[in-house]
Length: 504
Image 1 (cartoon, rainbow, N blue to C red):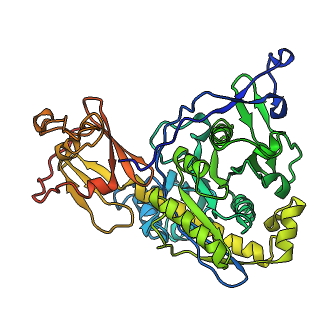
Image 2: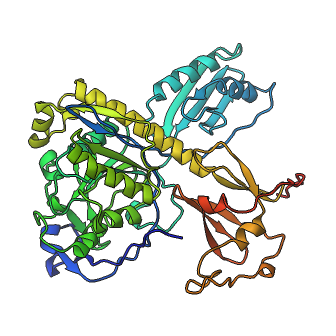
Image 3: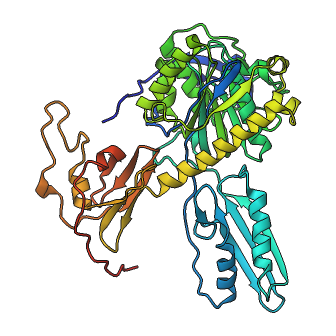
């Protein structure tokens, strides 16, 4: 049962003049209009986050719990040159996943010339911002070079292509974004925008492809905090998409760059504007999209949380009780939407409130760019490392949370952050569907009968739906959304079937 549903809001439409009808880019200042068309993207639930506490005279903010990696393994028989290399590389353990880099599927394009003793391979990490990529490269060189027959080792570092873990139909602009991180406070003036912008440029400095979306239409901060050469968003009239502006390699979208200044409009209209600015922008391939959330917990915030498949959330507050009360409301909002598990947030960072930090926000140059070796930059570096690690963890956990084991004809379930693994009978899972096709929404009467589902039914595909559910495709074409909490309540298999040979 979904907690919330995103309403259809008015959104932005673009018009081109005759002299620009042949193509080219148009300033949004001249072509941004409000219309009453409905948003087509369906609401979804979110990933999850971590959180923040506080000390006196400090910003407190938190990073998030997240996930990564498509686990894979490379097998090779011992005694062969390839087996020797993979065995050597399997000594390198990823500290975040607790698994060796061979099992994680990081080793790619392994080439061996036994005659010359040359070995080359590529390590494909989950993100270009991996904080230990240099350590991986060094260790890989060392362990392979120790093999007695190896004369030369060549290691190339790369990262997996940007792609979301969300299985639903995303708007075109969001389809090549790996992780979406919300920065929220629910209270104005506590440093949320400062954290969002400096976090974004910290991630970019770590090697990631990054974008920033300023979701505050009533009081956009991004135009003040950065200084792009082009201060007006443009659009592609043929694709009807928005071209983000750019500053120091980070893509930027804000209503403040639309030539409209600050919005004077009602909430439903604002929700539509935000939705279109976010989902129709040409973000391209991004490792991280940082969303600077507007203050509050109303329609705008709920719409954003439902439209966007969030990977993580960073919560910002100051130690004053007045600020902390509103921040707690925001944490509860994320908790209700399956983003945060109340206040069980293990990652806490304290940022000193310094005049230079405020001054850099007004100057158009983020503090981490103006003083990359300073104390503030080091704190953001630590936050950036935490965000990268937690996003990688959550992606890996989600990708393997629910799988189908054909050898025993059972569905394996291991919910993220749980040590327990259990088995479910596929027919039992299918019969427990609670959608409108199986249960009458008005009367609660069961429409799907026990005998309607064959005992030997098998799922065709299981895909993650963020950090709260999976989408299961069945042979009859039905797509079942199965939340983790529902799977945990279903009758489990006790007598595990004996494995059978799986036909290819």
